[in-house]
Length: 418
Image (cartoon, rainbow, N blue to C red; front, side, top):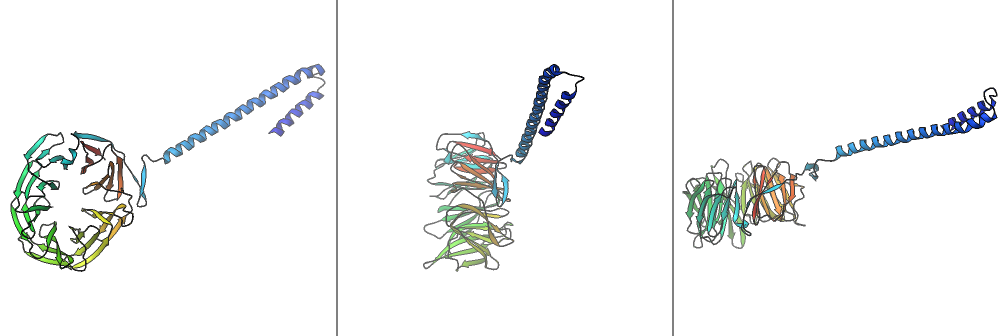
């Protein structure tokens, strides 16, 4: 472009210099400065136009890049789980109830209600802190076991038992010995284990409707009862026992119908580990959980299907699929494993969980766990973290209620919606 401009300037000067009929020397002296000024102005205007075009293009390019960046930015922070990106929600929490410091340890979530349980009192409350039921107690070591419909409170140093429903007191019992555990069969039965220093262990099958003892089993030679599980059709139940034969520890499983007739027995002579909990998978195989080991049995075939050893079994989480919260053997990191009925093996899920788990809760769809004031909420079916959050105080107890996470702290009860 510079070359073209130079050519035009030279041609114009040549024509002016040789046109004797239209101009003289004085006219040339007058015109030349004007022409130069006009040329300079034309060049300046053109440079300005080019600069404005470049600025406009830069602005347009900036907005295009900005739109691309905005499109690519996720709406919420994400975390990689099992090779995929899952959204983590950030939720608000609100206080449902407040009370004096150190009282939180006596409160328990009970579906959409709360139970206050101490050495001298049991109280059923709604979410407005209104009293539904209240009774004075004389417990040395209060303990509780519950499901969605019933709350069993007992004294670990006596045989006193109180069972609450959502309407109030359902029934009470007094054992001859000491309460040592209880297991619910849906909303129909409770199996209660009784310790007795003068006799061998007892298992009582109790009707939840009225507290009537329907069946009592006493184990003279076959060991001490540790856990009971009922089949889904309530046709039989299995009792997990621990027996010592000489210096060897032996695990025994006895199967009974509801008349007390023994239907079968398995002795795990080749597996000397201590197993304290027993569950069924969807195929009615038995899953035994000990402090650091899992065992899956086909009772009818008396066959071991799978064995799994970890550092520590933290919690079995029954449901459509059996999940187990465990700690690692080496670095004590916590993670989830799943029992696959179809593949008959344990599957590890690559979830980065809390380094220490203080509290947990679960239902058919979710698993919640906490470390101090840090909360994780996991989708059971997808094995994905959907809530990763801190609150302003440590958590003592947790419960999942519909789409809310109920948290009991030292001086309040809080709710997080998800």
